[in-house]
Length: 218
Image (cartoon, rainbow, N blue to C red; front, side, top):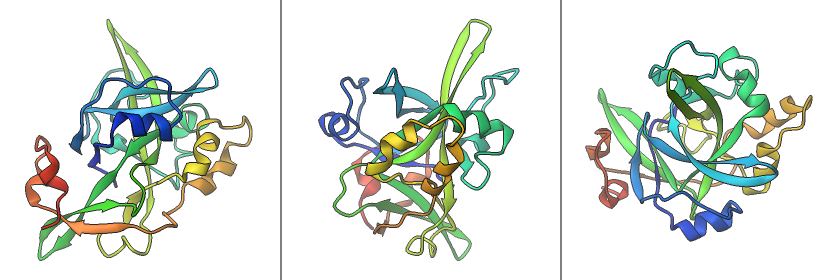
């Protein structure tokens, strides 16, 4: 699963990499946790548009708003068939910009946090889905991160990882072709490139912890 990540890349770089004209006001974040706002990029009227959505999917057909920790992630293996994600996979895809994410390794009965980045790549993106929920006097747009099996380098730490979309496939992911959506399942595979991993302080275990020191090696 993916339960924490960072985004501290300068806005200018984010706009350039994701071909954005505008960007919501954002601050550097080193410990983005579920139920908080996350930056997503989606296709609107043929153009890439960035918005801030709640992390933790609420389907548009849900009878009530509720926090469901399990919906912060969607499994790549079932994302096209599971009712809670199926329609969003067909019509409501997004990219979730990040510059690094955390995974926890079990060691002697304790969880040891590690920080993972892509060497030589300042920013990259997770594959995501979004939805729009309306309730009495309230509207919530929310998102989930798609996860898959861990790649070989990450497997000693954790058996799952977020799906990282290659930059050359950004438009393909954001612009599904009706009737051919399942062909895009090949994009939801373990990362094929290199990763950089290092241990970090257990301070990141606290969801409210924040600051650049969280991503530093220990």
